Image (cartoon, rainbow, N blue to C red; front, side, top):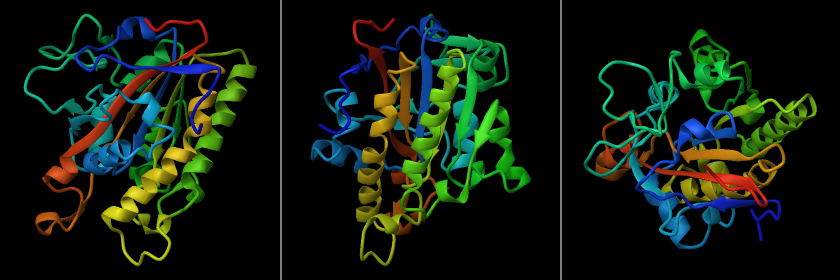
Length: 291
């Protein structure tokens, strides 16, 4: 079965609780994957239709968790993510965070939140001995301009090439291949813990390259791009158990409108943009238990 791995298993988290991230940090590799521009409704429908054979088994029984992004476009959303503000559960209440950077007055830091004194969770994990790696996708990670270097500069090392950018049909496979190569190299060099971040560009416009015969980006080509990404991520999730164990965060940074209420694209305050899919899970070696 695609996405299955006899060396690892996916742990289903309690959606009403967070794992003890103070125990996870230091004991697990941390893999953070943003599926750039992925809409919640499209992601959830593909799960319900059984069209996510790789990611589906790692999700809770009901599928993706419905959350709200802290921003409506990539640059702002990732600044929030790297400060510990991941997408917020789409329900009233104060929702505890996995990570936080210390500041007075935080109302979403719990006893299980890993709190860093550094300015970002990337810097915080580096200070805890992690090798922090960025595998870029969309333009805000391309390092071709001063703006495109801001987010990658947070990491110990960052990687990008045009072949891993938007509009490239095999971009996700290339990103996964590079990520696996770095994980294997670090393991051979002594097994330093890794914080691996991947910004998957394949779902971002123009995603019509994933739907043969499509002349324009549509909800259907958006869904086709996610099917492609689902298959492309299989080697990475299987490989996480080798240097593992790993804690995986998988989410979108924002969605995209395709004509709903007259809106197109993102960087607008619309339900299709603010509502994003989210999941986190453990990948453990056989016989290991999550914290």
